Image 1 (tube, one colour):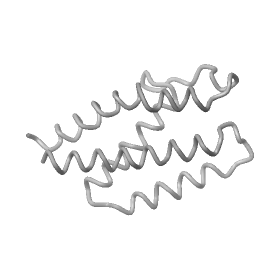
Image 2 (cartoon, helix red, strand yellow):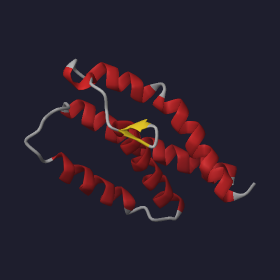
Image 3 (tube, one colour):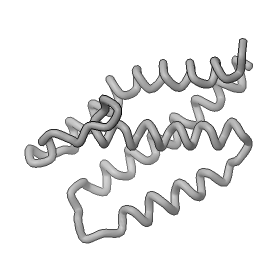
Image 4 (cartoon, one colour):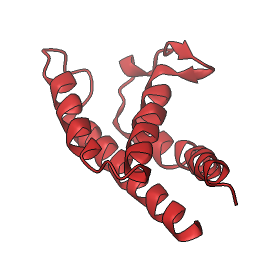
Length: 116
């Protein structure tokens, strides 16, 4: 199978499953009534979903290209964007979401390596 088609297939199928199960559950569990207002829409996705898709796509791409230091870059960026006075989301939600993104990118990579 073409490795690019495999890459895209794994990513799209897994993201559909995960976004409609695990991340939806997390959002409902941790968000308050104030946070449930409408998100900005980018490419037919709410901003929070789009950011998560981009996170996992970049991590997965970095791992496939054997650029494991992408995990360090990801951690630094996430930490830098988290240091603000606006605590709109809880630290638990932030940590669980980030660990989930990293774990999912690693699982995608493992599936990609097994299927290749």
